[in-house]
Length: 487
Image (cartoon, rainbow, N blue to C red):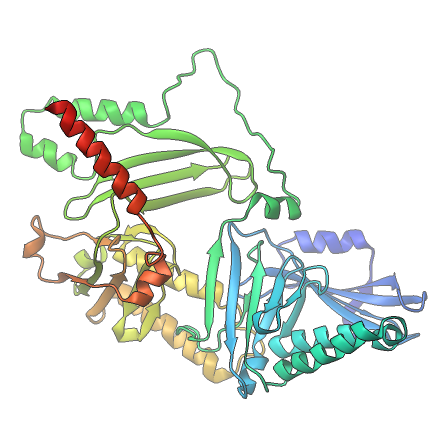
């Protein structure tokens, strides 16, 4: 180890972090010990966790007083959305405490049952386990108890009582909920069942608030206004081409030909309105277009592009009222035409492939407009990105081979070595798979099944608490007034 290290300046470390070298060496820097005031040694290692992020590991050790600490800093970019991991830890399950956790310097940890929160500044970026994070929190709370008992005995007594509860959680004697909330999206909790779904772990991604943008160092007031030329048109980008294209098609004499070309279009113009970039908070434009899809419903297509950071985002939202029933779509994939089917997957849809025993919960992939083949590719990329410790050094060979076999099976779906089944279950019926025949009833490999939503599904979607009585009264009064005017 000593032969592979070298004393360098900080500039060399920055260059190593900026470089794209997977074999970055271990660096040593002489630095001040904050406990005794003498000089110690800080070691830096820039590495990449496969399918996760680039990270910078730093470890300090003082030979004079024995002080030691380590830290993990995310060297990659901030993710487009924040993430929130919720882990239900039952009492007596020791395996839960061995789950590896990546906590960035901006992440907050919460224990709901104890009303306990570890703010970002209390524990900086670290690579640890659930047990390690809780024990570290207990050690830090109890480190000044002797001095606290002399100054404020009541507070010290309350902290002692709380430490008993916290250590009971850390040792597995009490059930608790472990929440890891990171607005940068760079934190992670290991799923030992990957690529299968973990029943005790839920992941949610969310848009950052202006306050969170400001805390991360981004300014919400940045204005990225493009220079306006004298001949610039005020008509939104895309409107001219869409209108002229429809006019050219309409000049044809064949009604069937026109209808075929209008299959996925609508007479509305592309609308443009100002918005804010979800990554850098700069001002950008969002373009929206409403279209009708045959055998489905009206949908709203939205696309945003940020000129400041280059971030692009597209989204599909269902239009019209909330359907009374959910919808389950089953596709029997037998040939390459089935792989080319258009797929609209809403953010409330679950995806299931029985042959792989794979089930993805709602919100896992977000809203997508893709094909069957593209959906399988997105599933593989998402699983590889989320389960960051898949090929880590700490993974045993059985789990490694399990993941490799699953990846091979996922690739075989796209090569159609055997027929397989794709099931999309959407409680809001906002998902769609296009038929390969002109009439949807003639497509024997595609089935749609409507069902009544359960109370739990309505609760999760917020429908149980939705009160539309005031709006119903207003519409009833408006209808009566319109009827009286007509009479």
